[in-house]
Length: 326
Image 1 (tube, helix red, strand yellow):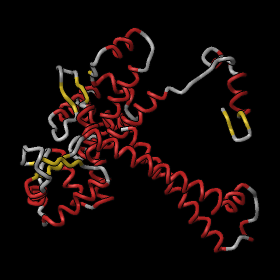
Image 2: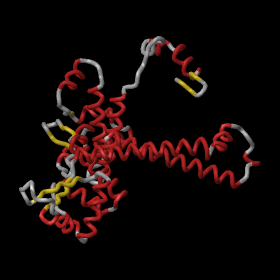
Image 3: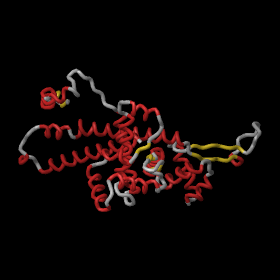
Image 4: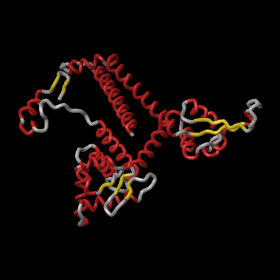
């Protein structure tokens, strides 16, 4: 209802003058945003995009189906009533294909209806077959079939896969592809020596040790020193010690979250600087009405570059925010 100059009078007149809004939007009511529902909806979209990227070529509308199932679950969790309370009190996330039809995009429903009319089946039967195909997929598991027409989205499996991919991409962007492979191997196999890692990543030991030290300084991996001598009186001797490298999943996750937050802060500061210092004149000029014919061509190009830069920053910020939500 709010604009830069205050409340929007057109919307206020519509609400106050229309009788059907008064029962649901009383004048003295106080509203708040359901942040948990908002976050769950965005997470459903992110996981749906992931499934569409992985298996969209195998199962038609795979991403939309998963997103609809997760939105249906979120709707039940955040709704009022005894049914919603029962859902919140249980760990069950089961659903039937008929439950999620109203959460599917209209374009997807139309495609399903066209496909159903060709084979002489109902839309629910077509959706059921699609979920059965999704339940056969592995690495990662997308859907589990728990009954004849009852399914469950493998929420934890998809989140774990997406988080590992985000971590892999972040490490690769900062330290290279070999470093990302090292972190992935340590996450799967645990404590390893540098020479063993060098053989697995097929990189010389000298380069492997250098990359390990960089990752250690960046706090992506941990080091454990195991001394071969059990005598406390003997001085430290590197030749009789073993150095084992590993990844602590929770520490690595916290480090990645800190890096994403730092990047988000830097981008917001950059956008503030661009808006208040670099492009202040262009922003003020855009708010005013003037004749474009008298504007210099170079100014138009510079303004377009400035607007494109702001748009790229906004897109990057949106991607970082979505990363934090998963």
